Length: 226
Length: 62
Image 1 (tube, rainbow over the protein chains, first blue to last red):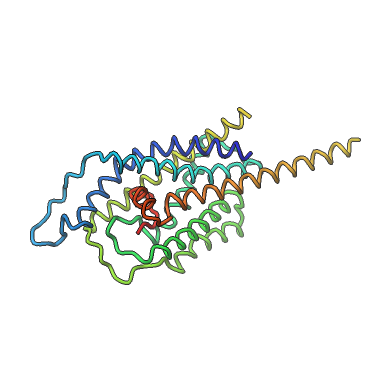
Image 2 (tube, one colour):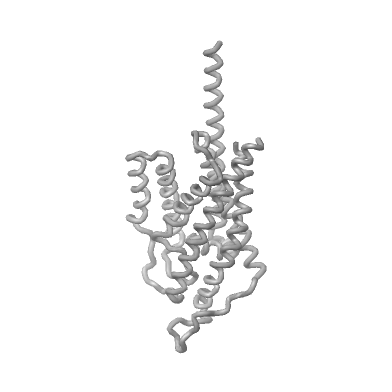
């Protein structure tokens, strides 16, 4: 079973990751590069002169952009490893894994790994003020873990107790609160920050649905081959 | 004879299920490890290489 999980997760993560990298390159990267003009001080918001809202940030930086493709593929291989492992456990317990419900697995993954932490720590545009990175990472991992357990409970223990526990697990990290900066120092216009967060989340949603479908596809395909 | 066969099936099933759970557990740890390396480790080279992906994927970056 280990070989089946790893093989299908690598295929799913690499192929989905490549598509996701293209989506990020097309829709998220231009917003990030625009924000970096303010982060580096090339442009100054509320400076002496008004600044055009549209800036030319086109261009392909081979080293930077290809590394982004590689790391997107690696990241989604990691997520695929987790998703396929959980699909394997669910299947052993009698759940059917299909291409279509794979997309729902992906949606659940998006809620757990992307939306739940973003509720209190929105996707950060470069230059944004933030609390200590280590504290945020601890909070991020704890929030993703509790949200993932909540998704599992809703999917496979749909009882009063299961759903009640899921609601508590989803709310708890945000009631405790994410680490926040002492003061706001971000130099980037709020319009760019908002666009970046919504683009990152929307592409994340598409990414996870693609990943879920691919994980289910390769998992069932590897099962037939065995 | 029938009872023995039935018992063996149950044992086989339990053992296969245990191997399955262990496999899933190790794959899960491996997955979390990959996410930690690509998305969270703050070593300068890794951070710079993965910078744009970390922002786009919503990981805490700096």
